[in-house]
Image 1 (spheres, rainbow, N blue to C red):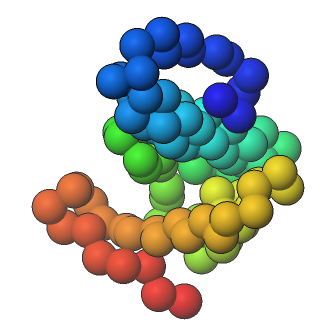
Image 2 (image 1 turned 180 degrees about the horizontal axis):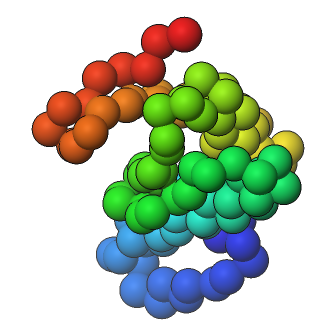
Image 3 (image 1 turned 180 degrees about the vertical axis):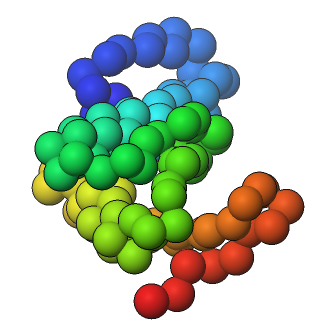
Length: 107
């Protein structure tokens, strides 16, 4: 996959698993890389915002109200820009007090 790990598929009837491994493994590696880069950015800029968990294809952050407009644009940029990736990536920030109250971030 993109991280250099190998998964050998020896039975041709399971070739589809190789493709699935490349896609899901690659996106998981991208999410991990984005989380690390976001954390580095937040620490370097001394923001109070902190990543609190990763769920499937998202990173959840605890963001104080006064930092929302300061941290969302650069974090979105980090999550959308991988120098080695040729496919456009779209991050869609949402904001709310809980998962049930999330709204699209618009600024």
